[in-house]
Image (cartoon, rainbow, N blue to C red):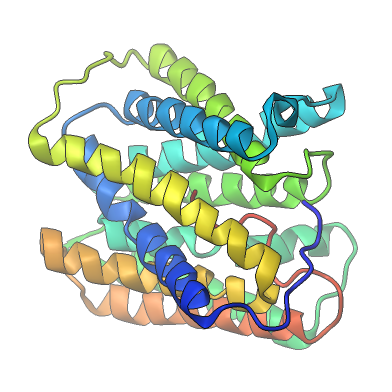
Length: 316
């Protein structure tokens, strides 16, 4: 994805609305997924979400730039397939699977928030030498992850380990997908990128649903339909368009703040709506994870042109 050129003085009202949308709407993804998978199998539910969101974003791209906007080269198509599967098909799919397994939505958000931590490890493996503050953030992030899984309480019982591992797979898939997104050839229009990635994810999610024996169903309650509509319209379309505006108009360091605001919003929503417990493990581990992300984003911002966080750190 090309580096955006920030505008010096963006409209303050638009800036506030876009930041609020990215902070709050993407923070609500985890709760909405939890509500949907209470009524449907996870992969087929995500496939339903992605096919509708992908078609809506495709329409937006065509209205903005005409049918020619949808033309992609063979290298671009490869990049879209790889990133669509990793970021959304596996990334969000396994997150939904984790919540079916009983992982609270707030804890899922905190585990996914470790994406910048894993990204630093990938860079280390590639021979880069991040600043000392970044490495300190990695250590704090891992300590927080251990506290979340080891100390987190759910009605007096330890958090479900298998579900936590599924969520960890989600986080790792997001990290690899984000890392590759900055290195593969992709279309220059991020709305087109998002549209194709959603459609690719719909296909990969359908494949996973068939492979695991899920049954296709649209037998949702009113609450289930509302949660699914929220995922499509609020999270995949409105929040993403707000994110695109921020990338084009403000410094990346400001846009990246959602990486540590979203999990806080998710924990609060899970507590308010589903009465998810916020025990010692969530408080201590969550604070460490969010603090680690703040340290990594801040330290990377000071070292030059390298992006402070992966190019796509949000669960769009």
